[in-house]
Length: 332
Ligand code: NCD
Ligand code: ZN
Image 1 (cartoon, helix red, strand yellow):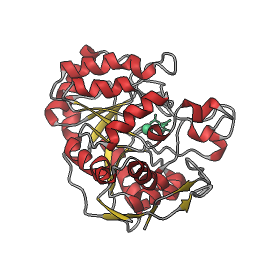
Image 2: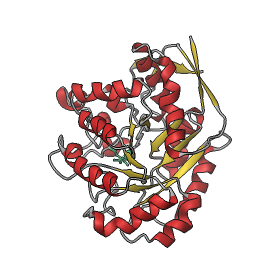
Image 3: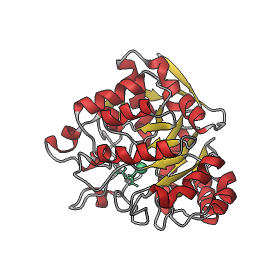
């Protein structure tokens, strides 16, 4: 059995920089036609100049592959409508991180005060620049996304023309929120479709499945699976593939982030096939994103085949999600 995907997209990807970028870009560039690149480098991407330079480095790291990096800026309270207007031709989104909630988010917003930020949201709305949000509070780890729901509602209400993307949603409440507001959309990762907190910490601790937001309950996972496999137009695939060196994962003080780029499409095919929904994979990994972001993509066919593979124990020194496990699908 084979499945041809037209221009698969990964709408939430951490490619890092320097040697890590050179090492890992190929895993996304080979399997995807493009990706929304996260700006949480140190220092983060906050200027047009650094954004353009980073894009050049990414393109170089991707070599000959057909792959478009859709760039994002790291939201700053100091942004002005003039700056955003100037940035518009080069950016596909602005990513808002509450300060300190995840890896490299220290420069994020410490108080999401809608009044204070309204000129930025207004300008983004007018310029049609989507707002991507890491939606977590600093509350109890299992409640952070639920608690952030009120902020999503406030922004969605106050700026009805602003496209808001709830990044890497993990709860059934977030799924319900999508129904309430026309301008709310979401990315869903591979890992949140496959694992719960039990897989992370229910047995022996698995640092390679530790990420922000943390995987939640079985019920939450099922709500995500249903909306993904049914090709709901409000959601799209965003791997949140976020590699860290082994030394930062297998230690006390383990960094948050799961590396899934090399296995993402094969694992998604397996999941969709298990639910007899393979024909909906195209919408989840490409068509929905194209509509939500209003982007054109390079033409690129990626062919999956039902052929067992054993996931490598490491890719250029980075340990992937499900290392050593078997998948029933492979990329041709
Ligand atoms: C990401 C990273 O490592 O950059 N980590 C993660 O756990 N997902 C940041 C993020 O998207 O939260
Ligand atoms: Zn991320």
